[in-house]
Length: 105
Ligand SMILES: [Zn+2]
Image 1 (cartoon, protein in one colour):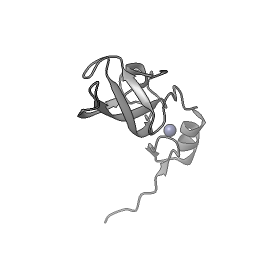
Image 2 (cartoon, helix red, strand yellow):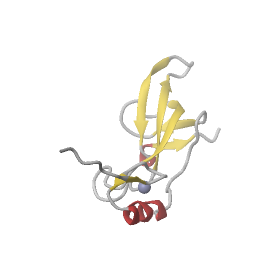
Image 3 (cartoon, rainbow, N blue to C red):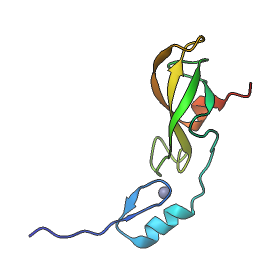
């Protein structure tokens, strides 16, 4: 007989938990490294498109356990469209806080 299961989701990162207290605990973890918002221009620091400018299309808060250790827990991440100098679209990429910087020009 299937059982109905109730889960609780952290309002910041969306991770779901069996217990309310765990979800509340997750929500108490502050959002870190919130560096760029939708529509802003960032410079890619490593990997594909290194050195190029990109436009932020989506943002999200990474859930605890994302990536190795806890360095990305509740950190701000962005999805970007990468463009060549001159403006030609190259592709899209997901960037963690340590792989981009805000373009201050
Ligand atoms: Zn959370």
